[in-house]
Image (cartoon, rainbow, N blue to C red; front, side, top):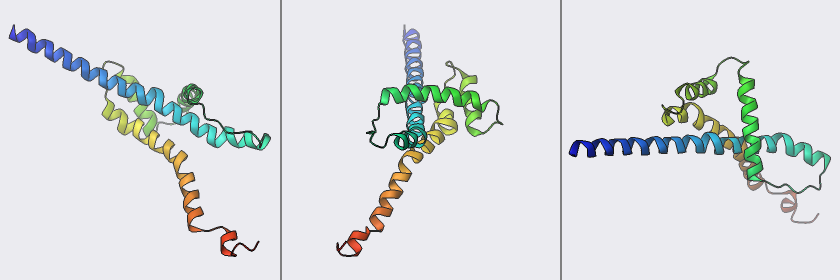
Length: 150
């Protein structure tokens, strides 16, 4: 009876560990990264074209649409990377696909793919705005320099 209880405990612990790993991988690779990819494409490609053609358009962010487009963009990027030489990210993606669902390794996935991609995408979204705000703070407007006489 004691042996069966320890075996059951072991199986439950392993099952919960696998579930936690799977949720983490699904959350980042299936939701967070595709959404960030869509935001970056929208900010750097779609929005400039849209505002050039229709300057009066009010920008709207629809997260569910961005997520769906991000999945599409990620699928296109994965297929486009097949024709280019291997790099760290594509090697990490290949490791994730080789391991499959049975041998999830979130630590390796984070160091090879999730961390660098998420940091890069967040940097592309946050850094330009932060630099603009810093410049705006450090360099007061001409109106303030001339004492408001213009």
